[in-house]
Image 1 (tube, one colour):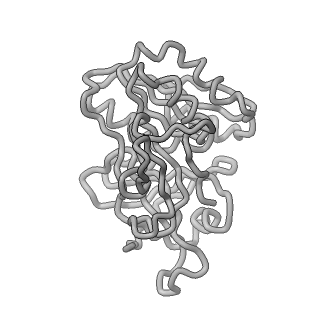
Image 2 (cartoon, one colour):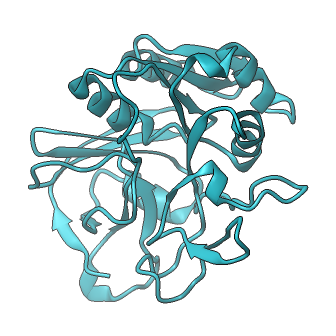
Image 3 (cartoon, helix red, strand yellow):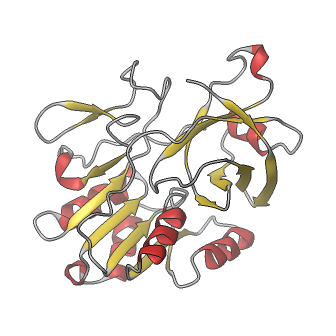
Length: 262
């Protein structure tokens, strides 16, 4: 995986969350795609940290951004203002915006996994597609992070939760009747995506952005394999990370999705 050293323009802290903005010379980035990023000098090899995968949060005028929570040494290093930033080109398969007409569509995000919905909302606005945004607001969220959500998604409906097992259904209740939407686009924890997949099945098309643990991010290690409805497995880093809900296997425990890397 080739990484490119880039200019970090800003690192803003919002409690435990960080928005990292960097220069990226490209005409566009498709929403739902991801990059891998690593802080530090590349001449040191992979030590001490492997690159971390992140959804592209936003992109405009040659500036891309990532939104992530500091969970361990790798993300802490990326949050350090003095560190170099090295990123890959956008990877994987993003959201498919074909066939949705002028909407309306619903964008649903949970916990710390709301990141890809900002670029998606920007693209839908450019296309003239009507959309509503629903975001979980965990009880642990800092005031600065709540303020960021209000500014990044000014018309979003925020659904406060206690982070417990009923949180996904709490958000879904705020959405109400799903059938008034032409499509649903979602990014959230596995429990939320499982609930959405069940609610949308046979009623409305849904696309789910999965957060799988990744090592190579180029499809060679099969470490991010996802069970599919036809009994096969797909690589989240190549065939995903966005999948149509009906493509995915739906075992009794819900959609099989791992947590984000620290």
